[in-house]
Image (cartoon, rainbow, N blue to C red; front, side):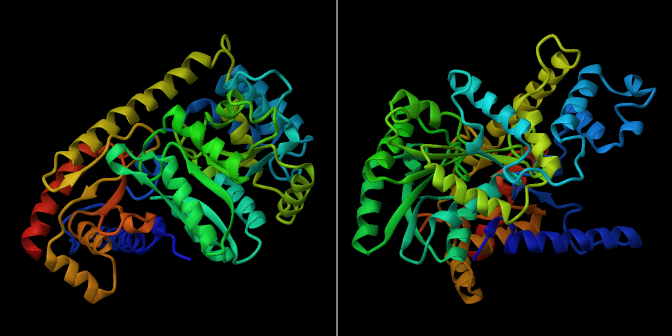
Length: 463
């Protein structure tokens, strides 16, 4: 398996970073033309100085502390807001008084799953109690839940999974690990990375002609690495496609799939099998290290749920801190609570900062002569295209046995300290070169300028 997000470029960046630390400790100059590494290769907000939202961390701190040092300490009200204290007490009861140090139910603590069920009902405008809490599994990040579903779906090497091209390498890597077949369908870059139902049909028919038993389809929305948000009609087309061909739909961090399925009547008709994933790692929370996520399953037979439960039970349970963080993400302070206004203000500030940096990065990259970059309307990424790489660079990359955009990305890293992911790691059309970068760094303007100057020098160097 190959996982480009933490592959060759990231490994080199880690080594450079260690060398810089050693040089600084010894009080000597480094051999690099930069003094720090800018890790734009991965959606890791807190690594790039995104500030943690206060209220969830306050509750988590109280959950971690023994009662006598936390919720029952005589001075606790001087240190923590009253609604954080009360929520921590409630969550301790939800953990059967055992705290975060004990195993939970293998699907996750039931009260936390109930919070997720209520969140989904509010989000989708569904009636109370319509989401079955037993169809929700809490996981150590969305990645663990995705791997669990793929493990259950890919029976042997005849089974295939439809994945978007470009796609997030978790899917291609896990399919390789499980021995399954990757069945790619192309997103249309010229149409803002839109989705064409005819290409889905083409891809499925070609796979069937090769004897592949296609069992599921992955939809990543907002797109990763592309950063696009699909139109409502595109989402509904995918749902109808999956219902028509009896494919399980794996919806990665999607907010409208279930609502769209409900509007099409697919849920009432029991016509769609949908597994929707969400995570605390992205968006305004950005709590990647807490490793909290969930999958909610709709239209999945109860016998299958039981098999998945057995699979989850073999790992005992997901980490309890991540479970708690999921609960805090889907159910924050209520309007009127002492922390509500501050909580909403902090979230909005992070959101506006992300939106501003998305414009800076995508517009800036699009203005570089020889580049083009579609606007990022969701996720945390820009996925620019490099229209021209000098023949000398392509030849040098072939001699080194790497893709041309890997060669370019290594040169960018060693020249500027900027760590990106080569587009080849996500899959792309033949002859397309580029990379994925986040727009999380507060140095976004400087990053764009460094990339522009490097590309000009790179072209001169290898022409």
